[in-house]
Length: 203
Length: 253
Image 1: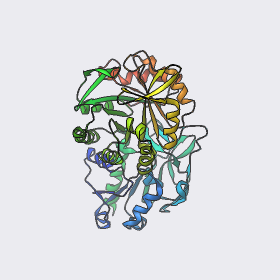
Image 2: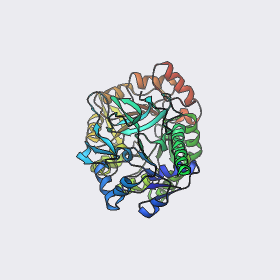
Image 3: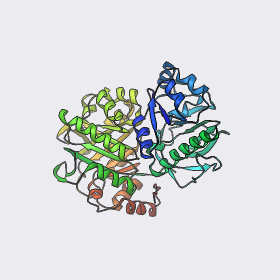
Image 4: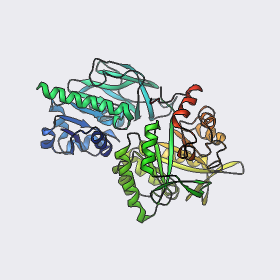
């Protein structure tokens, strides 16, 4: 079973519908007990970093996320909150992945980066993105980006190169919205489900 | 590279898809959920649903429709028509809409943009502007084009952007329903200062019109209704033509 974390910044209906289309058994919850029952966690997010962190703290979900060894997939703001901090309101993140989110420079191009874009580079050794190349389009909507570091497993370009997919240990994150990215997005979510199932068999 | 978006628009009246000519003379064009699914399968990049008969008692029908759509399709979609409060926006977003389009309500109450953007983020707040050329400027009309607000469209677009709208849905009332091409001058005038994406709307009749809106009008996305509903132009063919014109599009096949 997959648990979608329910907090103030969710695009929950879309993620839940996407998992239903993949026939994936899932729940939407903000209860630690229920998260403990799940094999994989999806951490969605839309909106602002600071209120989202506040909301996580209310239910002590921040600590739960830091402690878990279950596979976690952060989506959009959910991915961004995995990092140490963000220029957005100078907020603190969960600190699970090194780095600080930066704001796009809006002098040359429109911000947010909104619409369909491709990977410029992808590390196909990672199961989350193993069957992708630079021809698939994903739907992005964001004004802040994660700079590329050694945990980036796929990059994208808008104004500058930035991290599109990140992975460190059991924590994974995608800057785009797989639940809104047509067939390519469904495939990525299926990769995560397969990964959860795989690690589930391992343990 | 960021692709230019093709956005079919579905005008909804009493739960059915319709399309008018110059905001009048409605023709029935099918079930919105079926059409939405077809468009998403054909490679539409996004969808817009405009409820043109939004009244209180029909609001629930719209929310139910949004729920049905979001279960079926896996691309972003915007809902608009008669939305005038933060609670209505919340209801539609929770039902599965990715963005809401606000038009008359933000002219009457511009603070709604600030409030909505603060609560839900600018990315889901689309400011829809219906502009009509009067003399040598464009004027904003509301209530489905029936009320002249006397507002200068360019000034108004600057204001909505500053208040936190994340995208502009720019409809030329002069061109809407005419199939004579987008209003390129209007698009150029807006894109000269716009810092958020601009969706061109009103006037699409041929593939060439769509190309011009992007290459000459600098539109980030093009929206059209009847050319897609009546299958005059297939989305895949349109994308093929855009690609030939060296425009980046998302290929889905």
